[in-house]
Image 1 (cartoon, rainbow, N blue to C red):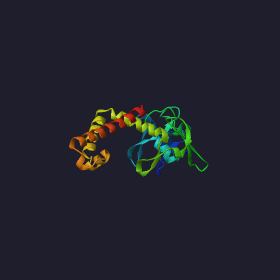
Image 2: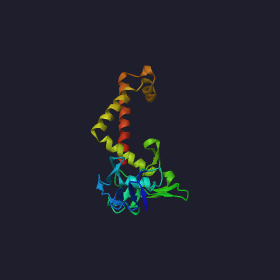
Image 3: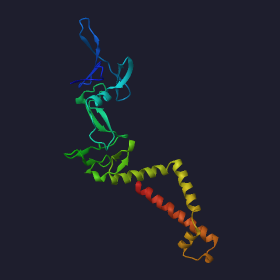
Image 4: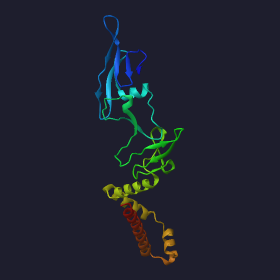
Amino acid sequence: MEKYINDTKQYKITSEGKVFSMYRFLKGGKKLKRKIGLKPNGVNIAKLVIYINGKQKSVYLKGLMIKYFKLLPPDNYHQYILNNKNGDILDCSLNNLEWKINLKKKSLYYPEAFYNKKRKIIEKICKTCGVRQKIAQFNLQRGQKYTQTYFNHCISCEKKVNKNRQFLYSRTKHGKKYSKEKTKEYVEKMETSYLLRCLRFNRSEVTPQLLNLQKKKLCLSRKLKQQRLQMSSK
């Protein structure tokens, strides 16, 4: 299958991922079909140079395949990348291209989505635990350009991941500094009426020393709760 790249019909692209120039002629008047070479640009992108209206332009081969062969991702609720099955970035034939969910970090399980006959997502595999679950077990997050995308881990695994992130952040210098500032702010904002309710005394029965002791007690109980959360996230 071949398709023209632009209205001037100077270039053709085939289903095998090859681009040919069609604007040169032989002496007999026949068009010269010349293959354009590809250059790797980055890790997984093939690039080529063409001339449109006399101006040189660099284009990506995968972008041309998506545009002229209408390669649409399976759904709009994930961020997909067009991947080469055999690992050769210069081989962009239709049989060698597939959409894959873009994973920023390597995971044990691939978060594959499953669809019904109407192409609606009904189930998905969690990338953390590897269990195939209903799509209701995955939260939606705000993506780019006001789109919503599904998390790649289920709700139960998401809670564990968030706890682990909080624990790792609390061990850093910035996290420790932030915790001290928040504790100081927490102590300063303690109202006397709140301390009296905790002590269950009247204002006339309480001394400044007793109020300070109650503040320290509340701060210690707050630290104990934080430590328990950190121990449970390990």
